[in-house]
Length: 173
Image (cartoon, rainbow, N blue to C red; front, side, top):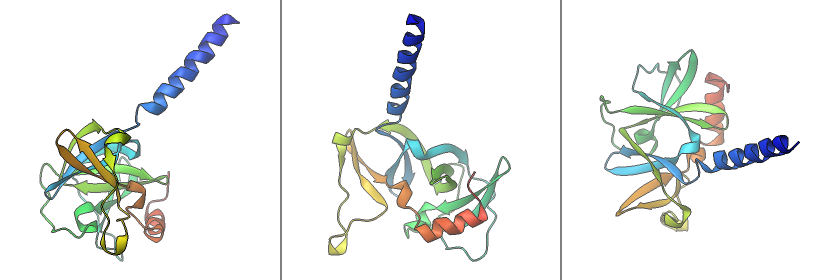
């Protein structure tokens, strides 16, 4: 009986610890001249750039799909999504596979950097755009030492209709 109670308490502690392991952790990456971060809890994996199959009738920022171990994954060029100047993919270009509402999506970035801790106390609100609105893509500005990382709201990178369009090409797992 005592052993069973200990096991339950230990499992509860482990569950609590497991929930906290991803809190305040961000995968940082470089895009154009800036450093960005996304919450690590959305990241499934990071892969090198590979052949992207174009899909007709998709928005320009959706470059197509890749075959990742037998699963079709739509791929978004984050530079294109943010209306940045295009550049050739190179050996540092990566695809960050994220999970948004049970749909896997690859995000093409210039290069992945590292996973960093950015406590809530070190995150400031995103600056306002014209007419007092904040960009839907921005979660905030994370302060790391003497640098600032632009923290993205992964769940807002696609509008609902765009996500629905992707789910038609690559149904959720």
